Image (spheres, rainbow, N blue to C red):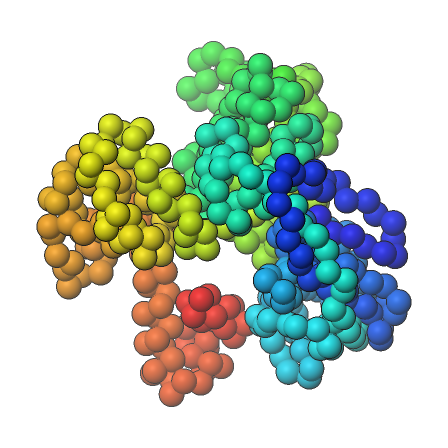
Amino acid sequence: MCPTSHDDGQATAVSPAAAPTGEHSLRSFLLRVVAGPDTGKTLLADPRQGGRVLVGQSSACALQLDDRAVSRRHAAIEPEAGTLHLYDLGSTNGTFVNGTRSLDVILVGGETIQLGATVLRVEVGADVQETVSDRSHFGEFMGSSDEMRRLYPLIDRIAASDIPVVIEGETGTGKEVLAEALHEAGPRAAGPFVVFDCTTVAASLMEATLFGHERGAFTGALTSVPGLFEQAHQGTLFIDEIGDLDIALQSKLLRAIERSEVRRIGGRSWTRVDARVIAATRRDLDREVQTGRFRDDLFFRLAVARIELPPLRRRRKDIALLAAHFWRQMGGAPAALTGDLLKRLEDYDWPGNVRELRNAVAQRIALGELAPSSPGIAGGVPASSDPLADIIARGLPFPIARDRAMELFEERYVEHVLAANDGNVTRAAHAAGIGRRYFQRIRERRKD
């Protein structure tokens, strides 16, 4: 979301441009500080601008508070379908709604929120008119659901600019596809589009990969090699899964972005580079910053614009569109894509999102009814009694399969340790060897 703050005059970096068709009336909300050091400050939560905004001490927060009992990134808010979604970001002193500590809550207006010594009142704002695009794709990035059409005006505006962007979303939602589409629709389309995936490069090689090295800089450096920043000169550098970037390298990345210059390992001089940076992550970077795993200043520098891609389960109207597109793209027989098959696809949640859907379609085209059993596309192989084997048999890409296996482990571990401690969260967290707050976050995440 691109926030509107009414006390400090900070302008929104990117706001939605006018779209060609369709208007809907949406409810806005106003958060008003009624007690604490910042009494009188307000924040308008405008649903037209999409995504979350932050409340806390950090300069990255839309509602920045001077209360020392408030965490740097204390809580996040997001308008959703006429309500306001509030969730705590692992704050030190907690978030209280009408006196009750809350981790994740839906507000309708009239509530009070306490963060540290600060009290906010939630007020229902004026209805606003949202303009929705009539398009079904942006370059190769596809979607005709309302959730996607609301994003297209913002995406258009971002593409035409040269500002850094952070694209957030679950694994498989199409972050790299959108990043390349932004590049191709922008002023740097004639330049290179260079990809750096933080999950595929060892931490010891990340610096050399990004910034390059001179001959003799280390054992095996037989020639001088430019880094990806230099290779992206006059184009776009896409940093995928930036939440996995080694913390020691984050300060060097920040310097490169701020000064537009890099120095190769073993080099003495600085090289000017002109590259737009687009980053993507499956992680919740606000929580990563709060826990100290990601630098606040780097996030603030990257997230001049933010795009949050919804998971496929929240835009089911796109499933048939995407499945038909993949089916045609891979040469599937038109008659084989039946209405019954599309209905089964739409009834499945697709935890691996668009990538999992594409893989399932590919398996179906290649193997027909003999394709490995996949929810949504029935095959001839029944599910086994080993859930891990089922995950592997689905043919998912490694990052998705790893995430699914970790989710299964977390769910079973939490269930086991809670049962062993009679449901007492404090004792269960102690037995698990982790903090109660972290244990509670894992527990709540598994409930979602």
